[in-house]
Amino acid sequence: MVESFEMGGSDSPDSAGVYPSTGAASAPASPPTNAQLILRAVEAHFMAKRSRSVANLNNYLTNSAGIGEHPDVVEECIKLIDDIEHSEGALATLSRVVSS
Image (cartoon, rainbow, N blue to C red; front, top):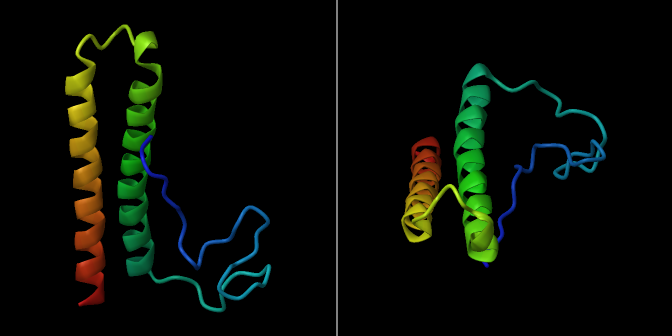
């Protein structure tokens, strides 16, 4: 129901340990800086928050009869949409700040 998304940057290994940017099975030549590690962690936080909200929204839209603890499914979906919007806005802001 809700669009899909891709996770992982070009400098992250895939499940086989291969780095897409180089095609090599070894790590990039230089280790990431502390600032890069922090920025990756911030990005991962908002991507995870978005992923969780998308998964829950899909669950509400496809299995709403099985959700007994939330009598107001519409309100819960509104909250999830707000969470997705916030996460996407934060990721856009992070990208804008990093590129400037």
